[in-house]
Image 1 (cartoon, one colour):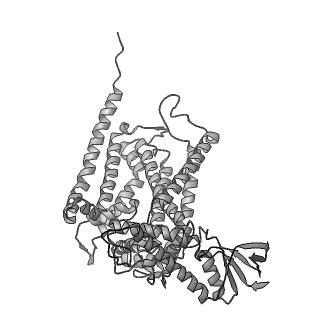
Image 2 (cartoon, helix red, strand yellow; image 1 turned 180 degrees about the vertical axis):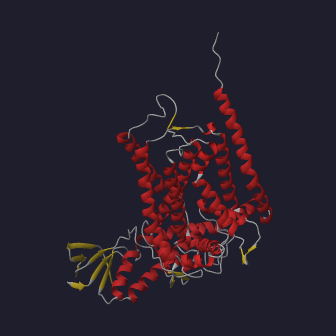
Length: 528
């Protein structure tokens, strides 16, 4: 029997890395592979071949006009299937050579054949019998614990050829490894990202329903503040997670955030230094974002989500008028079993949709953006939709810098700090403002149809229109190319529309609500 410190079954990315790591520390390692080529499914039949064909097709079709990162490829006038397959075969061949070289470099015994366990510490491969205290079955199916929140530079040597030899951060390298080398790693990344996008959208829809139906009125002001806090935490979780891969797009967003924080008069530079750990870019930043993203924000969100149904349990749910529903009673579905099973079904349906979307629709392809470089900016550069309105504010902001008490106020302070603070401050305090202005301090358990409160409907519609216009402005460069107009002309037009459109939509909504309320108030005359 041949004795080894470690026997690894499978030469896929996980098996290769595990064997090389053990050999690096002086262990005698055997790597068993039954396939004719090393590299596992990821290199030979799965991720690498499919992505090579996909990226080649997108590049040749003109959809990747910037080209693949680090690749200068002349497009042939006539493309054939042979051209695509040759590219795929060359990439696979080169990666097999990399794996073989790594195995030889670490003096790992590569044994061809199918491994069969004879006992917990003995494996038979053909006529050979191998023994070891530790046997690692490396299938490559690792779904978590792959990300490294580390800004230290490393040289990328993974299976994505356009980035070979590039200096990247350890964080970017770990995301690339998760996307290309870990089975189902890219799927899990995309499900996670889509879940964040849909989660914020669900909160916005839910909050809008509560606002337009008046469900925030006394005694539910506290629940409104809980929902508002949850929305802010969701935005923070989305931004911190979006920034962790340390790619060129997310790095550009962090640079903008640093500039906005630094623009606060008097305390801005010290505040930015405290949050970012020094002058941007800093080596501590990713670690701090990671702590916020997985340790601080999630418990706060779980706490708010837990408090929300507790308050509903104590105060009971609101309901529309009609039938037996009164201000003094609660008419609706019982929590058990009706509402519980309904919520469970919705959860399963949502999970299925997220898995489908994550598997079919690409999002945040960091390998296309490339690693973050402080002196470079990707173009076009748009964040996720829930941050797009902030991008639009910065792009539409006025180009003036007043001086107060000898301190120059940067341009980004007004659109980046003042306007969001006013919008979110008014949003959080709305239940108290409406009660104060209307003089209505009574308890309400019945919902209103939106047209029954015309002023509220007008203001809410105008604010939503404002956010839509700002989000559109966040993509003014892309929109200008699509419409074949100058960016400056489009920006000027959007500045006007951002003020005019909310007012027009608010007035129209108010007028329609008044007419609908008047029509509902008309009592039909009885027949003689």
